Image (cartoon, rainbow, N blue to C red; front, top):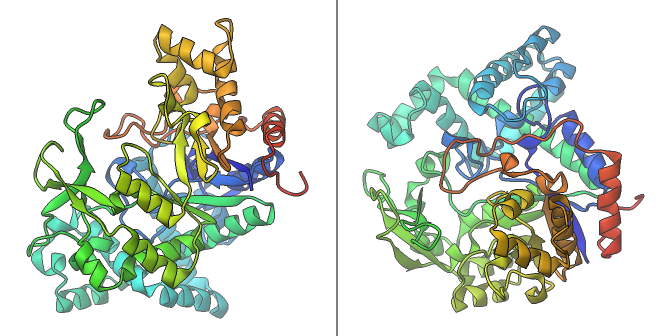
Amino acid sequence: MRTCGVLMHITSLPSPYGVGTLGSEAYKFVDFLKKAGQTYWQILPVGPTGFGDSPYQSYSAFAGNPMLIDIDELIKAGLVSEDDKDLKILAEKKEFADFGQMFSFKRLILAKAHAAFTANADSEQMYLFGKFCRKNAWWLDDYAMFMSMKYFFKQVMWTEWADSYRLRDPQTLAKYAEEHGVDIDCWKFMQFLFFRQYKDLKKYANKRGISIYGDMPIYVSMDSSDIWANPEMFMLDSDRKPTKVAGCPPDDFSPTGQLWGNPLYDWDYMDKNNYKWWIKRVQYSAKLFDLTRIDHFRGFESFYAIPAGDKTAEHGEWLQGPSMKLFSAIKADLGDVKLVAEDLGFLTDEVKAMLKAAGYPGMNVLEFGFGGEDSSYLPHNYVKNSVVYIGTHDNETALGWYLAQDKAGKKRIRKYLGLDKSASDSKVVRELIRCAYASVSENCVIQMQDWLCLDNSARMNIPSTIGGGNWAWRMDKDACTKELAKAMKKMAKTYFRKVPKGE
């Protein structure tokens, strides 16, 4: 079935609290997507973010981001007082989020909500909280203690904690839990609030024919409860320091390569345990999202391993990944799970064979297709079992990308789109969208920035950089107009892409 959707992270929604949340604006956006004839709302990873605010560097592979909890919903529930309204410290129309300032503010609010809940919740509410904690104890207990300790140790990485905490001495952990039980419970309560609000939003979206298309990073952050609690699953030495880390080798775009720094999995250990952790992770994502994109899919066939401590990615080596052994184990345990493989970049024959054997849709990015006379990233080379984008969160906006082309590049793009040199920049962007919609790819996803024809000041992320506005773009409150919804719906119908019922 041919479908279409919009890529925009929750943090990019308008909000009086300086960062998008799971509140009223998210519901309004779902209503807009339905009117616009869309099927998918693609979001980025929803885990709690650490240094650099990247959704791909999370404190947990399973937790939700407390930043996304909507405060107005807490006020309605009586957990936060109306008097706290004056904590709307950032202007509603501010274009970019200030994550550091907002989390300091939000922790205070969420701590107040936890105290109010503990003091006033009735037996049913306490039962639901307890049930949530018991059901998710397999990851929640470690995460809540990890976050409590992280703030106890002034937010330094867990590798810098005192040995008894870093190495998880049982007596030390038991004593800490006894002395800091309220704080640990507060971190669990934040997760309870997040997942309650998230599931309510997802239920609302699904009832209106909108599916949530989520994202699952391949790697986890070194500064995470996952590695602190499960060091045996990763390439660490006896002191729990990484021996090799993740990245990409040098290429024409990055002469020293990309040094991501994430610890690598010990796939031999995971194989001996029949990939239980990965199966749990995929199962968890399948419940959280209607469709899940697996980031850096080629890393499952072989992965680039850089010696820990190197300052660049120039001296890494390719090591063998689990390939189809992992995906066969997932299918054997979970059946057919709706996944999309992020298969961008240079792909070997082995990676292509793995993707074919797995059967997951791959990805096409139009912006990659105009570097020469022919490219597999141009629509005439697509296959049906794929998702097409103009660009993803890691790329320039369509307008920014086009404006950055030289004269020959712009001519090549206009020629492919059937436009002459009189075509306006906005016309080029709209025709790029049309080109993606008309393609054979069964799913077409367009960044919201491209529907709004915004330049690179609205770019979501520049890979391998920290700060500089990464992850901070927010949509204007008045951006989702009736006229835009009508144009999007017309595009969907013109190219026979599914439109939600009632629209």
